[in-house]
Image (cartoon, rainbow, N blue to C red; front, side, top):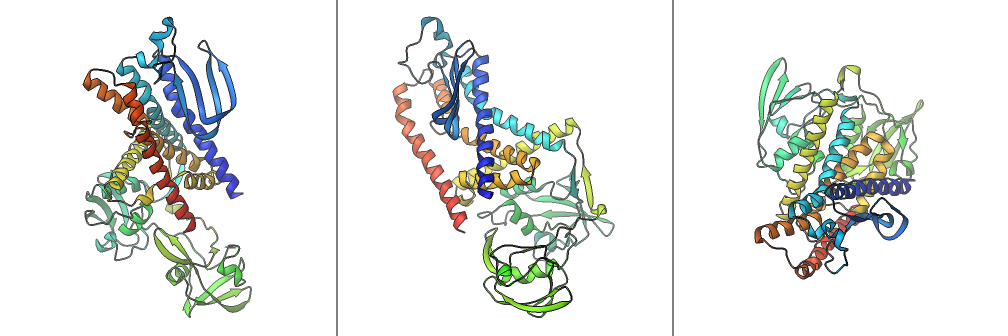
Length: 454
């Protein structure tokens, strides 16, 4: 079922985003008087085709759902016969500003689509945790600054904090820029100003989740228990006979009072046998279990294969976030801007070898994530679509031959040179674009396969 969800989630996402992207090219071309010959979602053999409209445009759904294209009259085909009364509608006969608008419309509508998706998310009321810190290790930046459990975050760089995690993307961006972050924290009735220096934070293996933990942004711990809610099949716990309803009593003689104690003792014990005592109904028994090793945020941790029951946070620790349509639109633009600048900054740091290339994901991992979020609900899937839409827009703007960014670079050169580049020259550099795209896709597939084996 997980594989089926991944296939459905991936195809649905790619289908929507490719259609949106190509519609941008199509709509602007039509508005500027350029004749569109074909609108194709997918490559390869057509699965469905319809000819419609005054220009008899072909609308195609093709077999390979990894892209699409809009074919316009006279586009990159100087030898194609064009009727005299339609030459003014050929793409290559348009002035540079028109061709540029048509090309940029594809990535542009991807960004606008992300704004719309984030706006839809922002219009939904959401329950979030109040911006109060949980237990903070003394070795983190916040711990060293004296922030303790129960302190309340008031603002980040002067922006009021409404809920915990509101500025994670912003903080991630600031760390990549190596800029200090100014926090305002309420502690024991006093307002404290805290400055977090970021220039010494290592960023090569950086990711948002591990960064916030590294800095000390620990949220209030959820109400917890020692009881097992679920045992994963074929896990060390299942092989040892543990069942839902069992309660942990101790590990190697150390008492277990809540799930945090369990995590603290098991995670550093990957591959080490543990003497675990449990309670079942009115009886107690002991088993020896060796936690399996798994990579989590770049670190090897031990896992037993058990899950705790879900216990909701108390009402006083929850705040409901509501936005008006105007506020939701502002949220849409803000999220799109922050995600776009973050993506560009990460790409640049990967090119300059400041950040690991392992952050590049390919179709396999995208499909895996799509399958997971589509099972969680509509809202996470919309968020996923927005992120992929932004990535698609940015990727297409890269100055690579064959991509939209390559066409724009060509138009810029023509504008400076004052003449149209030879079609032979343009065709000669196409293989360079193919090599660059093949290299990028190969790296993405390599990372995907590596993550699967890990």
